[in-house]
Image (cartoon, rainbow, N blue to C red; front, top):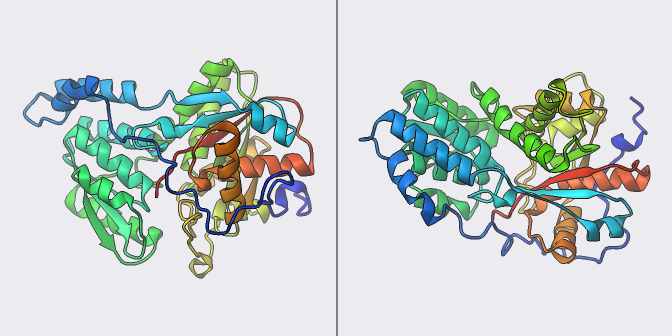
Amino acid sequence: MNRSSPENQESGTVPATSLPVPDDLLLLDGAGPGEVGLGPEMDREKAVASDPGRSIQDRLEAYENILESEVGDTLLYRARNIERRVGLRQIYLKFEGDNPSGTQKDRIAFSQVLDALRRGFDSITVATCGNYGVAMALAASLGGLRCLVYIPAGYHTKRIQEMESYGAEVVRAPGDYESVVLASRARAAAEELYDANAGGANTAIQLRSYGEIANEIYDELRDAPTAVAAPVSNGTTLAGIYKGFASLNRRGKTSHVPRMVAGSSFGKNPIVESFRKNLPRCEDLAPTRIRETAVNEPLVNWSSLDGDHALDAVRQTSGWAAFASDRSMQEYAKLLREQQGLSVLPASTAGLIALLDRHRREPLPPGRYVVILTGRTA
């Protein structure tokens, strides 16, 4: 691939028509999913699913009812104000902040708790920097499972209080995110806990769960869009969406598989870096290169645990991957709030930035473009 082509140029520029944003505007407060949890109509299912004294059949049925009722089927709507501003028609926003804990992580958390119940586990463990831990803590509490959440000792997230409020045991472990994944996996192996970490034995369940996003988009549009843009860290979400659309296409439901577009923090993600360098596989970055900020923390890592899956998805669909700066993610979050009335986690705009930066450099053809966004977690 030509390294000077648009998809290999540095991304993350601020729209020419946008207003300057102070460097300290993070939009992390007041951009959340609202009240986390489930409505009172789920009280009976919650009581049954979490009761170890009930039969496993009753618990599974109740938990399935919770999952089907509360997780997924998130909002997809057309962003006409953004379209007019950037000169690209038919941009659709898929807002994963509608999930119980405010992010797409609920999709894999609830699915894995259901799987853990079926397989007779009473405990589950996961490593996180915030979002996934809250989703897993909530999902596990509703299923009556013990939940151990590993967090890097140096990370700071207000969501720890949420995890603990759902009964999760928070373990502060030394090292970075990749290190605490290994610690969580080791605990799972030693104590026969369900390992819900990315890149592990349950990757197939995670990819299938994220594939439901593709099904929901198809239900609304009645075909695959031209492209789907998503932020990437480990790459699991983007890879799952691709697998969902590939399945729809194999079954004759769609006329094509959309181009997959990956966006991530500038210089701090192996998927984007490997694409830009045209590497055959997703290669780890040097850990010393990684510097987290309050904006980029949900995206950065030196090893993307499902990076090969995501890189394959981008390449198989003739998609592209690009970086986004902290400032551009702040700016786009502000733009979405002001133009579309949608409060999002700034890091979740990385896919949108990758899409629209490409459009400015090389106008995209008419079509329908879907962007995955998520709610705030501070």
